[in-house]
Structures are given as C-alpha cells and as structure tokens.
Image 1 (cartoon, rainbow, N blue to C red):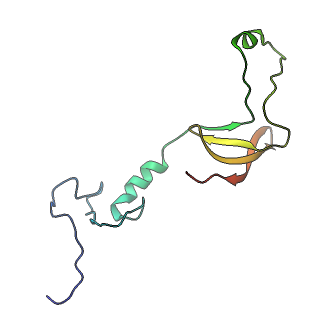
Image 2 (cartoon, rainbow, N blue to C red; image 1 turned 90 degrees about the horizontal axis):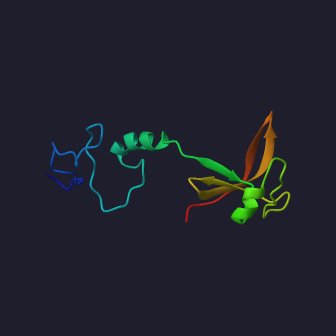
Image 3 (tube, one colour; image 1 turned 45 degrees about the horizontal axis):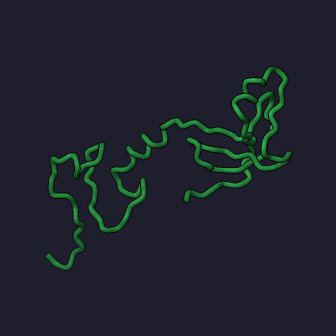
Length: 120
C-alpha cells in the first residue's frame, strides 16, 4: 500500500450503531456534522421534515384578573399591548421564529413575514 488516504469507518459491520437506518455505513469523524451531511442521515431528514408542529400568530397580549375574565361577555373588547401596525409574532411551539404583518387572503387572515428570527 502506498500513501493512500484511509477513511476511518466503524469496524462493527453488523452493529446498529455503525449503520444508518438504510444499512449504509456511517463514517466516524472528529468534525461535527449537521443533519444531511452524513450519507445515512437522509432518512432522519425525511422523518424530521414530516413532523407537524403548532404555529401561532400572536397579535398581542393582555394581563387580566380572573374576576375581569369572568365578567367578559359577547361583544366585550380586550385591549392588547400592541399598537396598530406593530409587528405580529409568529411562534412555533411557543418559540419566536418570525415577525410579520397581518394580511387578508380571500376570506382568511394570514401573516406576511417581515423578519426571520435566527435561533439563539
């Protein structure tokens, strides 16, 4: 053998740890990998992308005493902490992911994204 570059792979051929979900060998590396970099991570990508999560648009919030809430009835107005034209929060599983503006799409409301919030 000459000076060939040899990649370090798992020696345990039959082990679940050394193979991905489709039986492909996973290369061991000292370098961190993100999802999708390792060849066997493709099945994981698909599984993650198919997960459904709740997304909520927050127009504003208000703090009220229980006694005030119990007095609410049809037609009552609850004043929120946001001004007209102020950005609406878009939350995924209660985590802020974007800001936007309320828009009307046919007979439904939507949010036009104006800023994407990067993960912290």
